[in-house]
Length: 100
Image 1 (cartoon, rainbow, N blue to C red):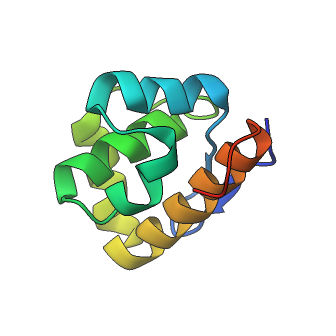
Image 2: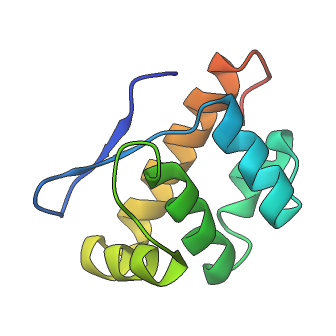
């Protein structure tokens, strides 16, 4: 797994990361190919919220999409979207794929 992307704005800062299994979770739950994930962040708010939940699950206790939504509300939509894009790109690269 790559080093997690730190999601500033929470106390303590949360760690966002996507390893191979998390990328597969996104594919399975949301039907989004690993190579199309960077575009998925911009698809709609529900998709972003689910991707945030999946990315936070490895290092943080986030029980469901609504909890991820509360985190997005605290941190802000734009900083979260940027952090997710970076973490997804890092995760796909580490998994041996092309840039997300």
